[in-house]
Amino acid sequence: MYKLFLMWRYLTRRALSLVAVVALTLSVGALVVAPSIMSGFQEEFYKRIRGTLSDLTMSSGQPHSIPEDPMLELRLEKLPHVLAVAPFVENPALDKHLEQVDYCFVRGVDPAREAKVSKFADYLMSPRAILEEVAKQHGPSREILDALEGKGEGADPELRAAYEEFYPEQPDTELIYEQLNQGTPGDPDTPTCLVGVFYLRYWGVDVGDTVILTTASANGEISEERAFKIVGAFQTGVSEKDRRLIVTSLRSLQEFIGVEGRLSGYSFKLEDYNQADETRAALSKLVRAGAFRDLNDQGYYLRTWEQHNEQLIKAVKMEKLLIWLMTLLIVVAASATIFLVLFMSVHTKVREIGILRAMGANSMGVLALFVTQGLVLALVGILFGYVLGNLIGWNINEIADGIKALTGWHPFPPEVYYIDKIPYKPSPSDTAINVAITLTLGMLAAFIPGILAALRPPLKAIRYD
Image 1: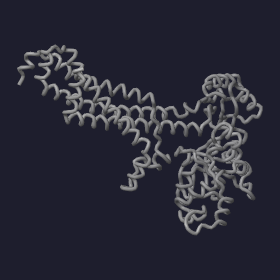
Image 2 (image 1 turned 135 degrees about the horizontal axis):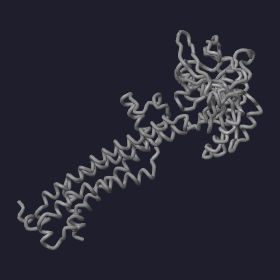
Image 3 (image 1 turned 90 degrees about the vertical axis):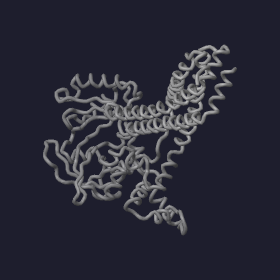
Image 4 (image 1 turned 60 degrees about the horizontal axis):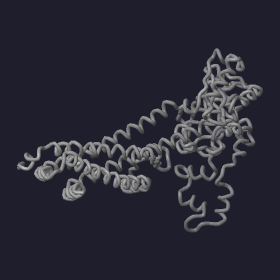
């Protein structure tokens, strides 16, 4: 019982104990917030990358060398665990806007089939979302748009009704599919396309405008410039795709680059992604059996969505680990304050320790007295640190908005990270690991001063001045 009394007495009568708790609280708070935000970024990143890709893709080593064969596609659909198959053609291109030329990637798909192997339909933007996006940079002012939506003073109910009729909240996917496949209404010779939301923002274009593309044909010659009319837009949340990808119909791109009857590859939707290796083995066997003409000679790739982004996924994981290690070093530095507090306590309580030893307290009792102090300081720091960290984490978007309002600087600018909100995803397993590490550091920080106190001879300690 005397140990608890002395521990409480020593802790409450030293200002340095408060310093140690504050330092540990701030460091544990950082250890909570930073990795949790990175976990949120990682989860959101995986979700967005995953949605833009199918479970499994097959592509040729030589561009556009896979034959388009309906009978072959039926065989592909009968492979183990395959739910749907969609052909695609891909080609790089140059995108011309007035005097500016930039690179892009054109992907030709059958939209209805593509929607069965990826989240193609989910990413299509509604007419209202497109209008609001264009209005941010190049359209009417926010006040005019509010009036159209029926907000603010002088809202016109008729305008509101017209707005809802002509700019619905949901995209008409069937109409978009039809326009992609059949070309421009009234002008079937002009092919159509979809562009990303960032493309709209960057170039200041709108649905109904045209883009001028130039690309290399299958034999390496430069094709003539061709105008594609924009009939819709998509938002995947992946900045590179929303900025560089242009989607058109399979037939339009085949005709543009002169590869009628040939494909870049096939995309597969599986019943269970965990069975991708079995499907890939069966597909490889089909190729080796000669189902695809000349494909064995030219080479082919069978890749899951993770293999498509293997290096990027590794980079995100490494970044998360590095941030965790850096914040852990902050906790280690804060734990050093526990060592300083207890070392000063041992230094100033030498005679008291000597008297305790002379009255019968053993070395282990003295050691336990100081180790317990370290654990208590660590526990209090952890408790306050987790409260502080979660308060900051769950309100991180409001804090970031406040910083931007005061300084004009946003800690996580959406145009860089391309997210509307900062994701915060605390993990129970990470919490358990952090608590265990912090408690261990607190105990180790207290162990050395405790050893010094426990091993000091009682008579020398009493005579210490």
